[in-house]
Image (cartoon, rainbow, N blue to C red; front, side, top):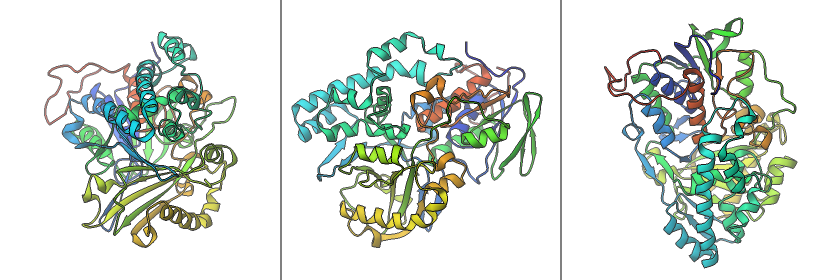
Length: 514
C-alpha cells in the first residue's frame, strides 16, 4: 500500500494548469474533491501553451502526442471522453526521417507497412530484425507499464515485483544502443529506435535499454495530432474540469504557501488567499521547492537534461518532401550526444526535428501560409552557454541553423519567413526551468523510478508534486500520468466509474467524499 496524504483533503489547490495539473484536477474531481486551479499565465497549457501572431497559431511546447488513452483516463474520471472534446488525427507516417546521405524513410506504426518500408530501405534481413524488435518493444512496454511507469514509489523495495524479473530477462538493464543493435544492423535504422533517449537526457550508448519504451510509444502505439494544435488538449482538459466544477483562476501567480506545522493551510496568489486541505505543485522542481521552503537532500546534485533551441517560423512557402514530423539526422551521432551531455558544445553536425503542423491543420496559419517548428537540441545552461551568453549567441545560432536547413533541402527558408519566434535556454530559464531546460531532471539510473525526486516531498504532509521533474518523468504521456499519480496520493487511488454518479451539467459530478 503506497503512502497517501493524511488527514482531511476535501479542498485541493492545484498550482499550474499544464498537462500534469489538469490531469490531477480531473482525477481529483472524479474522486469527489473540490478543486481550485491557479495558473500564472492567462490560459491553460503550461509548457503546452499557445502563441498567436498575425494569424499564426503556434504551439509553444510539445508537438508529438502519443498514448492518447492516458489523456482519455483523465476525461473519463469526470464522465467525459477525449474524443468528444478533441478531434485527434493519426499521423501517417508518424515521422519521416532524412539522413545525411540524402535517403528518406517513412516511419509507420502499422507493422506490415513498416516492415515493407524497412525492406525497401535496407533489405529483408533488416525487415526481419524490425519484426523481432517490434515484438520486443511490445513485451518491454507490458513489463514496465504497471509497476514502473504508472506507479507511485515509496521505496526501492517496491521494484522487487515479478515484472522486475521480466524486465531483466528482456535486457532492460543493458544499454539501449547495444540492445537495438541485436535486432538492426543498419546504422540509420538504429537511430530511428534510439534517438528518443534524448528526451530522457541520456545518450543511447549510456541509456538503459528500458528506455526503448519511448520508442514503443512513438513507433508502435502511434502518433497523433489534435486539430487546432497541441494546445487543444490542455484547453479541452480545462473546459472539462470547469464543467465538472473546478474553479479555474488564470493570471494568478502563486507568491507563497501558508503553513501550520507540517501542513499547507492556504495558497497565496497575487490576488487572493485560498484556504486548502492539500496542494498539488506542478512548477519545475526549483520553483516547487522554493514554495515549500526546502529541497530534499540528495547524495549528488540533480543532473538536468539537455535543452533545446526552437525556431517557430511562419513562412510564405513550404517544402513538399516534409511530413508532419521530419527528423533530419546529421552524419555525426555519438559525437552529437557527447556535445549535448558531456562537453557542452553546440551540435557541430546537428540532428533536428522539423514539425509542419499545417500539414494536418492548415487553419493554424493564414491562407496560403505555412508553419514550421524547428527544434535543435542544445546543452543546458549548467553545461553549455549560460543564459547571459545566449543574448549574443541567439541571432548567430539562428543564422547558422537556417543555413544548415537550406543545405538540407529547405532551400530559401530564411527569405521565406514572414513571422518568427526564437526560444533559447535563456527563455526556458526565465520561465523557471532549472538549467534552462524544459525537459527537467535527466533519466539517469539514479534519477529514475524510486530514485527520481518523490512526488511526496518530505517535511510537508499535504503537498504533492506533479510534472516532468517527478514520477514518472519527461514526456506528454508520463506528465499526464504524473497528474494521475499525484491525485492518487490524495485520494488513495483511482476509483471505478459508478453509474449514476453524474448529475447536472455535462460532466458535473455529485460532491461526495471518497
